[in-house]
Every structure is written in structure tokens, then in C-alpha cells.
Length: 380
Image (cartoon, rainbow, N blue to C red):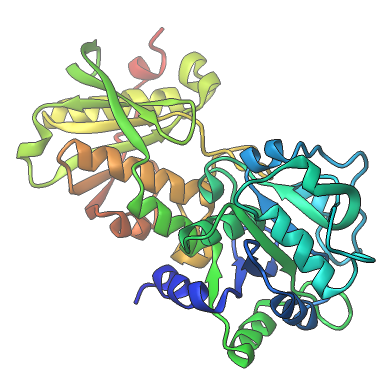
């Protein structure tokens, strides 16, 4: 069974699992559904790890509870990533009724159950308390690749309401446990383990990310008349453009260039090889072939920590960035909508593109972008 379906099958019954951030800062966390959580499960979780008790909640649930961001950043041990820099921590809370000091496993379970209740109400909580809610981003890991978003995605996919307990796995020194320790813990405790990279790939392969919204014939200097097709992202407020030359659905293999938006150089050019020149050269190559696709992807793929699109140049699920995987997923869904399944890639440099095959696109070969002539580079 595939990694995420296997995780969900065991997680639905055990209600406890491990999530590993194998994309950003090395981080492993114990996760559980907040809904109807038992004192015994909270006690087991606290016994496994000594981290702070967080509950990831959706923006809707945060609004329903009328929770706001903490006035000051949450203090954390030096060896632990600062939560204020990686997630939106809200004011700590306690259940209004049914608790004493708020510290015991039973008291913490009561507060967590309120946060995961089917009908959230602000009067059910008091502030401050011993449980730290963390507001997640809409779209989950497809928007932000982080432990809170991943925890909530997995809990929802397992059929529970939108609230997820997560606690960082720490070693005896108080540092974040390395992956090897988390894997050994999963074996000892018979817990399922999932990776953010697997979760992102799973969602990208199964969820519709784009919808065709407009189409027109566009005359171009380098490829003649092409069909310009606009696709709107379902998870970001942006639109992508496919420039299609010829009837690509009738070709077994189609020449394709995928280019991410770089507004300054796309519009104004620059010194030496640049994205504007690359666009022109790619269009010319597609025009010379008589059929092909240029995908121009707008910039929803900016990770909070990086601030820029990363290249599609890494091998394997452990090294692929979330930006790259989202780019794979969006590009593949647009190509499939155009009736394309086997492609020749136009690439400025040789790249490992193995990740595309998991999204239903077969790559037959890669071709360098033709040398950009001076007349093209200097086009006004």
C-alpha cells in the first residue's frame, strides 16, 4: 500500500502517529486527532515526548473561538525551532469547565477536546492556559509545508474534525529528535509514520489544482498563432497560461517548456541569458516544430522561508522542495487537460525530472533550449 493510505489506515484506529518534516527544518512530531481525545492517549503522548502541547486548527475554527495571535513570541529551548518563526501561535487556552490545575493529562485532554469539538464556541475556553493553538494556512501543505498544516491535513484525511494535537519529539537533552530516533520510536510504539514530502505528493496527485477559465488565439512573433489558455488555481488566487501550438492531443510526444514567472526579467530583460530570452527561444523552437506547449506558471510556489521559486533539479522525494512538487503537480494537471501525456522537455540545463512521472506524465527526452540569437535577445 502507498505510504499515505497505509498511514491513514493505521492512524484512523490508533489515533496516534508521527509526522516528519523532511523538507524544511528537521522536525518530528507526535500527532493525534483533537476530537474526543482521551486522557489515556494524552498521557501516552506526554510520556513519549516532553515537548509543548500544540493543537493545529483551521482559520475558521480560530475565528469561531475568537482566538488571536500571542502578544509576544513563544519562548522555546535553544535547540528547538522557534515556534513563532514557523507557525502562527495563538493565545494559550484552558477549558472553562471540568478541569482543576490544567496540567494533568485529564485536564489537558479536556481542553484539547474543546478545541476539537464539533461546535466551537468562545465561551468554552479561558485564556491563558496550558494548551497552545496554532492557526494553519488554508490549503494545508499545498500552501505551506510545515508540521501544523501536515498534522491537520492528515487528521482531516483520516475523517476527524479540523483540529490536530501535535507535540515535538525531543531527545533527553531537549533537542529535536533526529529522524533515526523517530523511526525507532515508531517501531517500538507500533505507530504509523508519514513524511511531509509524501503528503504533498499524495495530495497533488489526487486533488484538482486548476480549472480552465478562458481561451483565445494569440499571434506571436516567434511561434505564429497559438492558443492561449488560462487556468485558475483552486488553491491560490493566481492564473497560469498555456500557449499551445497545433493540435497537441494528436501527437504521441509533445515538445514542452515549463517556465515560472520572473516579472522583471520576463518584461524588461537584462544582461546575458535571461528569462525573457529563454521565453522567446522556447517559443521559436515550438514554432519550428509546428506543435508544442509553453506553460507559464504564475508565482504561487513561494515558501514562507525561502521567498522564491526553487528549481526542479533535485532527485528523490527526500530532496524535492515543496515548490518543485507543487510545480510538478500544477504543470502535470494542465498538460493532462490538454491531452498530453508524453513529453520532450525544453530545458536550459540538464535536470532530473523523475518526479513528473508520479503525476502521470512520461518524459521521453530533454533538449537544450536553442541558442538565443542577438536579434531575439534585443527584441524591444
